[in-house]
Image (tube, rainbow, N blue to C red; front, side, top):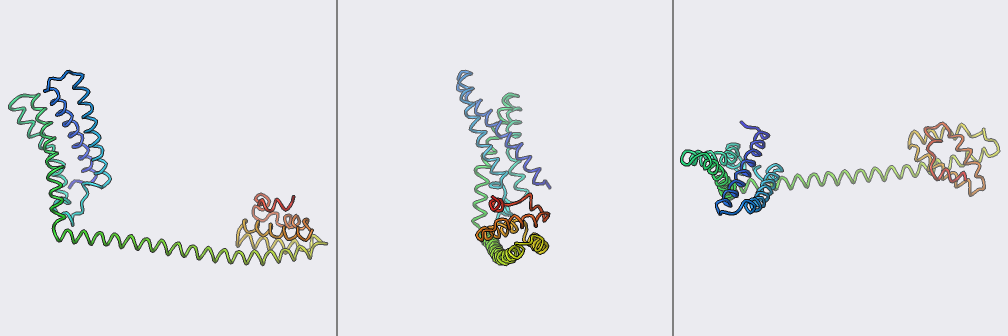
Length: 275
């Protein structure tokens, strides 16, 4: 059985044959009107552009799944692989039949014209008349309508289920973020108080609180990251500045040197406290 890829390649070939055939038919019709060459070329060129544009639109619809792809349960005839092959083969067979008939009766040139006419007529008959009628007849059957309603209902239910899952996931993420921010705010407040106390106690002896402050900074870096360290440092520095001891913030900056990328990644708030 032909695979999907092979069917689409065959569809491209048949579409090209249809475009060439329609162009030949237009050119031949204009030639029979006894127009001059430049008139024939001008009019046929415009017609060819229209035909090619229509073929491109049709090909896009087929390859994007808007046409030609029918669910076999809802379309037992036109959704089958046999009908799809028939749908593609008919223009080729029509061109061969008409071309051979014209060739045997009137010669090679008329045979080419017959091939073009047969291709266009067969394609129009199947693509624009037979296929729509078959599709309408299939969707008119009660069982096929029931299957279509069931499929649409299942699709809506699946879409609604995915929407609910996305909404629930978003709500969980928001709750987790809120809890994390609340816990982080509590840690920042507690750590800020501890560091301020350590700095004030060691105001007269810089070596006194260095180990404790370094351990606090290391703990914050490991549990909350460098951004939280910067926030705590900026808060502590502002508190020290209000007490008139801006030097204590510089001391904390020195004690935290070596923790992660502290010296390489100071925040703007931390830098401002040194100015």
